Length: 322
Image (cartoon, rainbow, N blue to C red; front, side, top):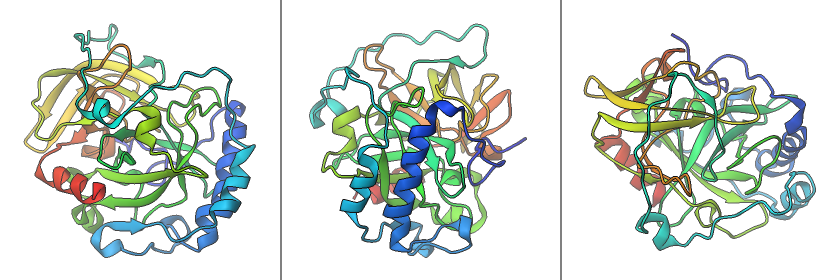
């Protein structure tokens, strides 16, 4: 078995094709003048971020103007990219159409369409930064919350030199680049990488804007104590690809503390990818019942896993959201 992440916890990150060079440059600039200018370390440089004993990291004060200037001309966008009209009521309680999710045939991940609420996490602590995990916008009262796998953001210390690009495709970040303002993981994960607690929540902001990410992209709902045996979709970004992979199958229980999702071809970079049920075919939004991680930090080429979203994950969600 191998870790699914090609980010800090797994194999060396492999930058994707040259097509996302502009976004890579943007994220590197962000690290240089934004998060890292504040002197906040990460596990990658051997130092530890503050708040680590409680499983919580908070962004230090950063020079927002300098960061905005660096990002203004670096992120590539395309005219006419559709942006969803989202309000807080629709994000959580609005009516969504749901159709049955057919099982993928063959049962193998294939290129899929991006979803506005799902995107890669880019890491900037290397000469050629690339994306090594996947994260999703999840509904919260503040509208600024992401969920991913804990091993994507904490390995002996918090990884804070990261940026989220929702809806990313072919070097384009249509909904902007977002950076963490806080990260929460369970102390059980910090203590010994407990596979039953491989979940993390991040609050994020967009440089130079007061907009909440959920108002821009929409958000997935989140389910605690989800029932197994339901059809679900995984959508995640391989570390060396410009587009996400998708696969649909039934989510099954793996003991009392894990979920499993059988599908071939979910490679490095897809750690943190959402397990989505009740997907609206129009918006692509659904309900998150897990994120790829957990057992063997995600599984192998045949089977993916997720820590079960029980009481511990529910409590972590509320701590992060509040």
